[in-house]
Image 1: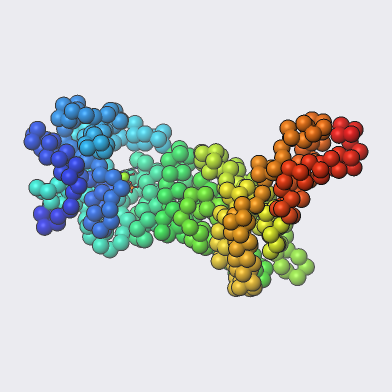
Image 2: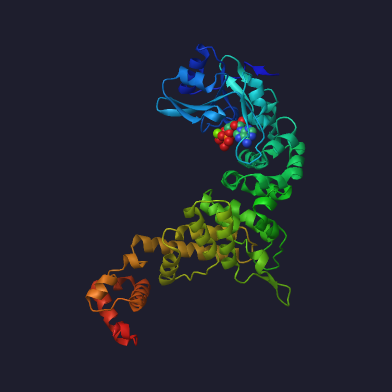
Length: 457
Ligand code: ATP
Ligand code: MG
């Protein structure tokens, strides 16, 4: 069945108006792709894409306010009540031999040809009020069955654009669907060709998978051979056992479970994905057969740095993730002073995230001492909440004196000054009531007197 007039999708007014304007100018026009899929699933689409028989020039003649977003790919953004809608001419794509853009784009007047170039049956449906649903490849049935299936012959479709292999797993993770066996078999076969795809495009799909409701589907990327291309470090972990009372899973399984246990936030999910990534390289087994991973947090942080650079993550995401990976295993004693120091060390902005990381890490470990470990994290959190409520001084920025104050008070500029400020901060971290100018200046004088550094005589 191709057209189904029984199905009604509630189109937003802007979209109805755009379709109507194109139609009254004599062209075909449909809502297409993700918005049709999401509507049929009863989800609210993020954005509405429109496909039309009109050429980009013709689209521009129909609407007064347009932006040339990607004319060479046939896309014009139409501004309707202040919102932009992408209107794309029916097209047939060539190969993506550079892994970034189709080599060629040919416009066509056939909706069927446009739907053929789309990746999966559930993404290849179009809808307009007059025609109802246009579903040439059984997308509706696959939606009902929860299946991701390539449009046409999967090997061919993945050879045209290898990123589609990542997209298959990404949609399966977002929707909780399974991948059709022929489609999965083709991914297995062609996974090495993902190497042709740019890091940026891979990163987008990885992040969407991590933030989905089923990030554990990264296991399918591993099983299919996709992580071997963009995250071989994870493959190594999937094969590393952890013979230790705190653990029951291989490093890789522990990693995947910890990813699921943390809130859906890019930095947090990336941190869990990478927190133990250095374990494959740091494992030693003692004479009792127990495994140890000394220095794994440092090693994981170094590797995270390299991996996130390679995948072209922005600096802020990379830096936060690396800091959290590095700190994930640090013990924090349950005293206010220890919590202030730990928060200052990683930075007050990241400290609450560090506690979430520790909780997720614990959730993916064995039951051994679980309750005590959970209680320790809760105690640290409540100490931290009290510290925030009291607005205690945590970092040099909050200290009641700074370097210029000390210099005005007779200290000499130089490295000795930094040491004194560090010592003052530590005293205040121990006892916040010491954070007054009078106390700190007096202490600084004492410290200068004690110092044998001639620069601070
Ligand atoms: P979402 O926006 O929620 O991530 P989506 O389905 O809208 O999901 P987009 O990446 O926005 O996904 O793409 C819009 C549509 O374009 C898809 O539904 C699909 O029909 C088509 N499409 C996108 N990328 C590809 C691709 N690499 N190969 C084939 N078709 C694609
Ligand atoms: Mg979209």
